[in-house]
Image (cartoon, rainbow, N blue to C red; front, side):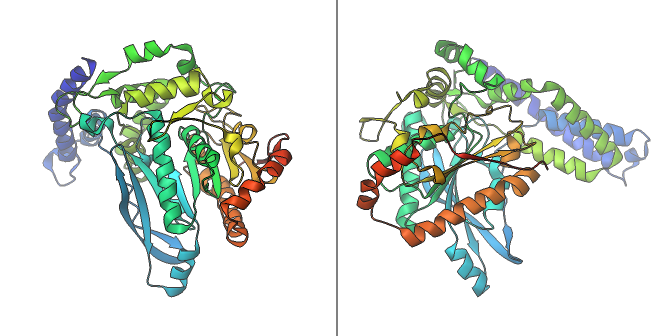
Length: 457
């Protein structure tokens, strides 16, 4: 019922938002007689703010048209490589007429970025993708809004997420021989499960795994986000945040955790900060500070665009990751597409190098939560395990913004390139790698990886 009430309210607000936008433009036109009033700029700014607060935010576009590779402008063509009911595998294909640059592009590593399915769209990683495109062939998981997925497409569980990731990895391996995988925040857990299951079956696993700011072990340094999931029961979440999609959407009747509720939770974490940000936006409009105005709009166009999550997936994630800690306790079983349960065993991973990244000031995934992957992946020899703590970086700073580009990315780039070259020189058949496994396990059964600390920026 709450979802229907929200949709009714949104529909009623829409014409008022449109009026506010029109009024803002009217008072903001310098050649308009109305704009000659001394208060016109303030009135225009007020209406603009009302419009921003009342408008409906749709899914943003990545909008990456080109990147610069060693001084050469390279065109980007965004296209869907694989279309699943709940996710699109999206590729950013690079084009250039420069022969030397083209040769270099063909030799660069292939990276699958697994974006979070935790409220925001994959475009939240726009800066991650744009930066990675300079030195890598880039694919990303673009998760769909569950309210747009018809009931006829079936349910979506955490197990399905894990199976999707495995399918995407195999697809890239079939095209390129192998790939690297990067997970940001929430997907660190299902990505580790996916690679673990592939390793347990004796399948080829990605050359490297880069895990950034994720709740591998949510018992370590629990944050406010973790505490909410830990302190409320499964039934509380099911009874208080799960609703059915209204009739005016393709996914009518589907049980979801609505995006508008998630957005309310995001804002409630730092209400004072958002209030100040909107007031500063109002003042910047009056001053004519277009740079600050554009930055505010760009951020909130992304931040306010949220998607619904399928209820089964969301509830199972809460239970598996934050309540029963099945991954770290070794009790997590995933149902494969054939319906068979398989135990997740990270210790079976042997031929994939591991890099974990944490932000010193991360208030979403606490200190040590991501680094915990090293202890679980005991089959990876110690020299192939690396950890980076980005000083001064919060949760978003490890994958977006200056600290991502200047502190984190150089480590990620070097890590991937080093192991990509090594894999090209010493590639061995799967059988040989399997025979070497007992030795690798013996060497790795020691304290976790060497820790690198990024300098203050």
